[in-house]
Each structure stands twice: as C-alpha cells, then as structure tokens.
View 1 (tube, rainbow, N blue to C red):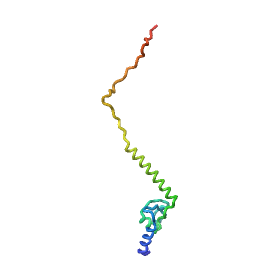
View 2: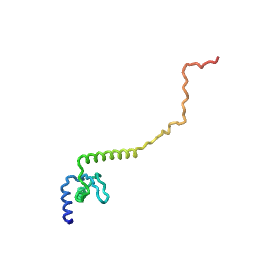
View 3: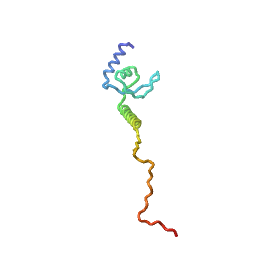
Length: 116
C-alpha cells in the first residue's frame, strides 16, 4: 500500500468520526490481538485501527454495557477509597475516673432479713 493512500484513509476515517473518544471493539489479529475487547480511544487511534483492520466501531448495546461496567468499577473504587480514608479515633476524658466502681444501691426502708 502506498503511504500517501494509507495516511489519507486514516485522515478521512478520522474526519468521519463524530465522537472525540469513540468506543472500539477489537478484532482478532495474527499478532495475538483478542477479539471483542471494548476500549475508549482517541479518534486518531480509532481511525488507524479501522484502516488496519484491527477494530470496529462499538454498537449501542456494547456501548451501554461498557459504560455500565465503568460505573460499577467507579463506585467500587470510590467505596474502597472512602473506606481507606475513614478513621476512628477514641478520645477519653482525662478528668473521668476510670477506677471508680459504683457501690450497689441499697433498697430504702427495707429491714435486713432476720435469722431464725
């Protein structure tokens, strides 16, 4: 392939993409590329992948599933971050007497039991 045609195809494909960061679905390649992996890439990289036959534009179902997974991952990361930052401090009052044990209260006006 002529290099001029190659780069012209990339530029034309890039101009046709409307999104700044399109979602692409990878295709299986001879150099070990896995098929079915959804990724968010730049327009330039997406155009290059399309021209080289390494990826296709993701359909609506794949997009929805990708964004749902991203939201779940983000919530889990935020929850883990919050748990990491959560601190518990036990503060004691220095004026409180920790050795004080109250005596059992006696019942008022009850005479002690007599022995027989």
